[in-house]
Image (tube, rainbow, N blue to C red; front, top):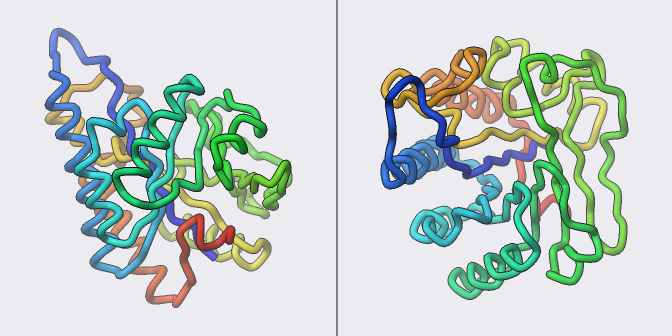
Length: 250
């Protein structure tokens, strides 16, 4: 099973030289990038889970409703948010969309399982920080889903042979054929492979001069959009099953 997931998060507010980009433009970039992903998913008739940054979810409510209307799952993304901010974001969004938010993704885990259980989360999907070397580190750890205190803990996937983790940068930088072979070998060995991208990876960094590491620009923007399109076409051509997170867990 392939679990398709996307993190709806803004580009960091760091700019090259004297260039400055306003908050409204940054929000617009995030919305357009997400809408591009939605169009690609619709083209291939596939569903995914979108993890929305807790700090942004209030200003992105129209986008959240659009994601839900197309059949995708909404979950929350927390990058060191406070527990009260998390609770408010969850309750308010649930009231607006009329659906329970079951999942949370943490970049740097800050909430205990007891806290997440009290807020009625059912699963947590933690991801690791990446730098220029980390994406290619060979990792050896368990990739099975475990359950603690009634919460399913979903780890990042790792290729069982190359030991390369399936983080956001790997899909962006690896040749697609190599990445597809990784997916095949993982599905043969494991029950699932968890794949994720950040919406900001679709940003045109030639047009919008955000200050990011040079290696993060490689393959970003339109190239990333086209690569995602090709990858999803490959999934359908090979009749590989995909799932939203909540459907797979429950």
